[in-house]
Each structure stands twice: as structure tokens, then as C-alpha cells.
Image (tube, rainbow, N blue to C red; front, side, top):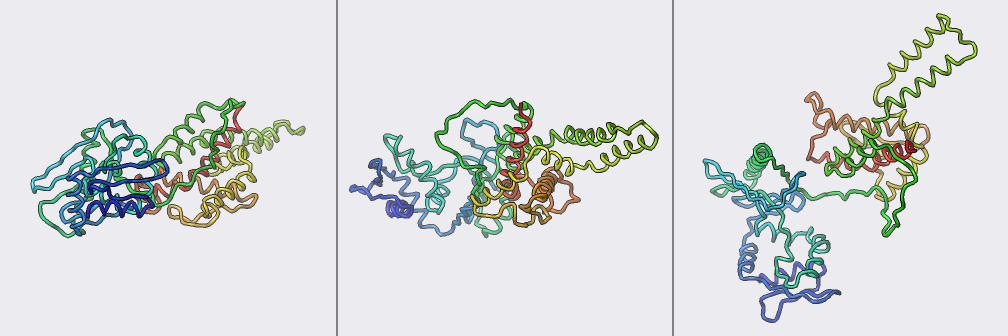
Length: 399
């Protein structure tokens, strides 16, 4: 029965497999060869127990396994370099425990039997089979780090979930506070991230002819390397914001020059009053959205922006930017028309930036961003747009 369970799950993902003649392993055949994977008695026993129990529920999106006494959730490190397998145990007076270590056998088998396993098999397992001289059943399995909440007596699963998640969160906070180690629940990406552009394989790398602003490049590299969509968005935004005052001053200088360099200018009182009026009017209209729009108008071609949005939406098969939808409490979109696209873009980008930096409790939950929540996925959709704008500015300012 254990070997049949393995064979059927491999067959489900289109893998050609069979049970070995001696009944102690699985044979996998593909275009690269034939691989025999022995299955130990310990794993056979674990599989039997896994198949016998119908008290466990695995949520593939949450990567969460709930049983009558346990709640196990996958976690991943946030930054830092961990060269070891973590092994932390927390205890309480009422005999409840929490462990952060390698995932349990039930968790590994649950993932193996899930719909998500096919992607893992294609991305990881096939390469393992080719490299390992003596593969075993464990070669097929994913063994991520997980954190497990365990109670001494059986409980309703809803109660375990209700009490378990805050307890796990508290333990993760304790690790961050006392051990300087940051771990977070790792969910499955429900929506594939749309790449910024089509990558060209084996493209010859040439030395750029231009010289770029070093400070802008640093913002750009921070944005590209960040693992958080919110931080990436803000870093790209900083590349735009870096030019606010310079462009704003250029606009003011131009308006003043057109007045002062007039052939009739003699410095009379009314002419001086006119200059003062120009300065005051410019200062009163210099809110950040207006300054962002000035930067975009100076460095970004509106027709090029419209073309980029059209191609991006065609590539992802969705009207990401041009269709009106709610973004942090406000319905926004970019009209793909001249004299509208740039101003709509400035308003949208500035609105998202405000949601990322304003976390005051005077804002409604839907109007601000909470890190490591679903709003990260919303911000992620707009990364290609703000990245495009940052690149246009960087290139336009190059020498």
C-alpha cells in the first residue's frame, strides 16, 4: 500500500514509475534514464499511518497542516544568512509546546500528495535524480522548515487554529526579539508575479555607452534586490522622488526667466509683485503629487508609457493598470490617452506610496499597508509600472 501510494502520486503528475520487483522501492523512468529509489521500512510505516489517519487537513495555499492536536505551518527566514537547520522548542505551564525545526513526515507527505507537488518535482526533483548516485524516497520529498503548535489533548480544529496562530506569532516574535532571527509564515503565491519584460536568453551583454547617476542606481539596486514588494516599490519611488526639487526649481526658474528677461522688465513695483506672485503660486501648488507629475513630464514620454502599459497588460492577460479597481481604499486606473496617462499614473503611484508609509490608526484597514499580508500581493502588481518609470528617469538623466 505505501509503494502504491507513491506510484499513484507520481503517475498523477505524469511521471512514468513502477514498483520494483522485490517490492522495496520505486522505479522512475524518463528521457534521461532509469532511477531506482528504495523505500525504507520507517517510511513505509509513516505512509501507512498517514493513509490510515483521516484527521489531518492540509491547506495547500496556506501551506498549513491541522490535526486533532497539532497545527503545523511552513516558515521561511526574512533576511539574514542561516547556515544551519533551526531547532527551537518552546514550552508552557499547561503542557503546550511549539517547535521550529524541519517539517514533520506528515507535512512532507501532505505536500507530496498535493496539487502543488508537480511544480516542485519539475523544478527540483528531476535535477536531484540526475545528480545523486544513490537516490532514495526522500529524494522525492520537500523538507522545508516549519513551526508546530501542539496541545496535550485532542481539540476541535477550529479551536486549534484560533489559539495556535497567535501562539506561533508570539514565538516568532520572541525569536526576533531575543535571538535576532526573523521567520515568517510562508504561503503559496496564489498569483504568479508578472515579469517586467520578456527576458532574452543568451543575449550578448554589451557595455553601456552612458554614465548613470550613482545615487539613483543605488535606489534601483535596493528595489531589485528586496524580497518585499512594499520595500521594492518605495525604493523605485525614491529614484523618482530624488528629482522632485531639481525639476520643481527648473520649472520655477523658467517661469521667472520668462518674466525677468522680458525686454520691458525694469524692476518696477508691479513687476516685482508679479515675481513674488509667481513664487508664491509655485510654492502653494508644489504638493508631492504635482512634483511627481513634473518629474514624469520631464523624463517620461507619455506615448512610450501608454505603449508599455498596453504591452504589459497583453503579456499578463489582464488589465492591471487601465481598468478601474480599488487600491487601498480608492478606485483608480490609468486612462491610456494623451494628456491623461501621465497625470493618472502620478496619482496612482503617489496613492500607493502613501498607503505604504502611512500606518496611523486614523486610516481604515483597507487604506494602509500591513507588511507580510495580502496587500504585499497588491503592491507587487504595480512594481513593473514604477520600475519602468524609474528606469526612464535614470536613463534620461544619464550623461
